[in-house]
Image (cartoon, rainbow, N blue to C red; front, side):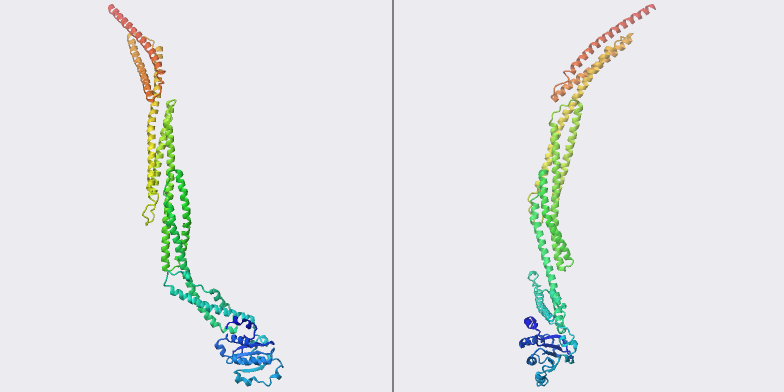
Amino acid sequence: MEATNILPILKKKLAFLSGGKDRRSGLILTIPLSSDQTSMEELSATLDYLLSIPSEKCKARGFTVIVDGRKSQWNIVKTVVLMLQNVIPAEVSLVCVVKPDEFWDKKVTHFCFWKEKDRLGFEVILVSANKLTRYIEPCQLTDDFGGSLDYDHSDWLNKRLVFEKFTKESTSLLDELSIINEGDKSSSVDKDKSADCALLPSFDPETVLQTGPAWCPMEEELLAQPQVMKLLDSLREQYTRYQELCRQRNKRTQLDEIHAKVMQVVTWLQGPGSELLKTQQAIGDSMRAAQALQQKHEEIESQHSEWFAVYVELNQQIAALLSTGEEEEVAELKALQQQLSDVCYRQAAQLESRQNVLQAAQGFHSTTQELSQQLDGLLGMLCADVAPADGASIQQNLKLLEEKLQTVEAGLASVRQKGALVLEQMCSQPSWSLEETESPPGDPQDNVQQIQSVMEEMQLRKQRCEDMVDVRRLKMLQMVQLFKCEEDALQAVEWLGELLDALLKTHVRLGDDSQETRTMLDKHRKFVDVAQSTYDYGRQLLQATVVLCQSLRCTTRSSGDTLPRLNRVWKQFSVSAEERQQRLELALNFHTAAERVRSLHLTCQV
């Protein structure tokens, strides 16, 4: 019987166990009769419930029943006493009927309960409240009978409800935990069985376990303490097993979740992630195209970063479980960790390699674009007409042309270096998974051919420019030579003019004798030879200018100016030299004849 079933009856306090004991350590059962008509059925139900609380050992010591009839009628008291014969005859050792002071004396003198002891099975005595202490110690009586024992029926009833709730829940929980634990033992053979099938107990074990020690029993309830302790011990044992079961299942759930996440990461990296990289194998045919591919690659890297973040988190979770896992779990975790790391590192290597290729391609296209601009500038210079004013400007233009050619050669060398770097990066790209036999879309061989084609094109353009530079260099050197010839021809004219001036101004003496005149004549002839050489040199230079002008396909600038001046000076020089020579020859003849006459005269005198 449970208190909840007769809770309204128990609240009426028709009978109660105060926790007090008689001198024989028997429990005291108090029946406080009221002035209202007491229902014997409710009183019987109350007594049945109260008598179910003490242990059998306690019942064996017998009860002392206090029937408080001070507020009730005699016939009800008598009925209650007689009812005890049917309800608890074996457990009752003494019934103390508390009578009203001088109220029943006249009515009950003819009735002696002691005479009915053999028939009733227990002793009945009539006693006033103030004399009840003859049979029971005051400390075991409630204040209703002048005792000092505290008793709160509402508090007692609440504690009984808590106790019965604890007993019911703990018993039910114990059965459920036993079923769960035994069920897990039988199903442990099937390791593939999902942990979702685990049963959850109807009550929270922690709450139930806390309820037991928190329950503060009174004396009669202490008699149930062994039962409570036994329930608590069993419950703790089953709960410990249940906690271990939950821990194992939670660990299995964690492993399954980690396995699922690992497979999710691996599936994406080996599937969509790899496909994204496979479709991005081109390197672009220009700087702008390479930059667009770089931007696309950064978007792909951003998508991969999200999965790499999941990888880092999973790696931390796996590391935490490895420190506490069992041997079988550790092996499984290490296998998952290795699989995850292999896929992530392989994919990261593919991303890094693709990034290196794109950076190298951008450097290659940038250098190629710069070289193309340099070639265009050189070609523009070569295609422009050359009309310098003098040889110095031609030399300056020639120097600028050589510098541009050297810049182009350095640019081509840089293009080759950057192209070789791109080819090296493409050759060093990590291979795809071993399961794949087909090459990814966008065969790298096409990129190799593209790089080689660009380098060959730059080489051809540079070679064409070099050929044009050779032609331009020859033309400019010829122009330098032309200006040089013109300058030297003018110099020859000036030298010839200076010789003419010297002939006219300083070559006037004819000599004092034949010997001197003959010496002067020899010098004059040498002087004329020098003038002749100067004239011939000027003529040769002017002829060279004519040839160079024809080669350069430009109009002759020297034959119409310098040549007439040269001829005119030479003619003047020739006339003056001829006259000088004639005078010297005449003087020589004169000095020779005079010396001969002087010699004959001297001979005759002798």
